[in-house]
Amino acid sequence: MSSFLEFFREAAAVADAEVRKLRRDPTELLSRAVQPVLWLAVFGQVFSQVRGIPTGDLRYLDFMTPGILAQSILFSAIFYGIAIIWERDLGIVHKLLVTPAHRSALVFGKAIAAGLRGLVQAAVVYLVAILLQVHIRWEPLPMLTVAAGVFVGSCIFSTFSLFIACIVKTRERFMGIGQVLTMPLFFASSALYPVQLMPGWLQALATVNPLTYLVDALRGSMIVGGTSVHALGTSFGVMLLVFALLLALASKLYPGLAR
Image (cartoon, rainbow, N blue to C red; front, side, top):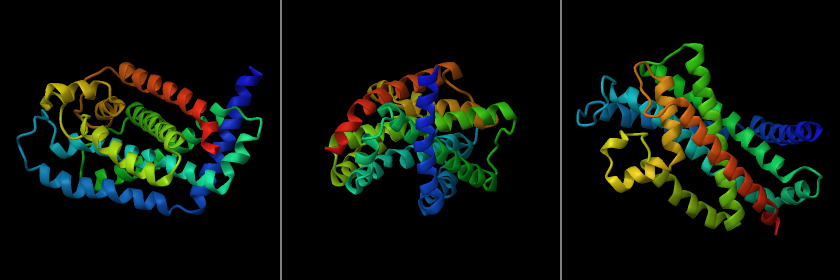
């Protein structure tokens, strides 16, 4: 039990340091908020006039809002790894690695910080959705489910980002790979259209894409009349399994980032 508590104490210390950095310079959050605003206010308004996308009884803007929230989480968290490379160059990673802290606690702490950032992103998307008169569910349980989904999704993609950073080890390579990965993850999900509209090979990719399960959980909990393809337990189970796998891989590779 003591080692368990020590692990979370170490992770909380790392998360606290990350949040302090964000409080000192919140401009990144503001810049990241521009993209979901544009997607909802421009893309969503235009495609709401298109009748060719089967969304059931939902307006297209309502249908896509959970997908844009998931996209915001993905795009914000997937470049989290570049900050780790900066920390390596500044010598911060070396200092962390000489501490007795568990390597997995260091990675987990950064994932927690990313989850907190994701909740701020969610607040921005909710605000824009209110202004655009999206039909949002305000019951406590659905809102807690959305918050949990946003938090876990941020943990997944920030840890995935750190995993990639540990492999490529340079900012230039990371930026290229990050851009290559984000769009396939986004478009091979149900963020903008139902999975049923995809060709067979793309549906196969969507079934192993964690973003699909995040969007599914958000759509069923966030929007009035929104429905989920998978049960909430299934979606969260898949996401937690992916996070656990990425946490183990990133923790194993994290010491190698310093070399």
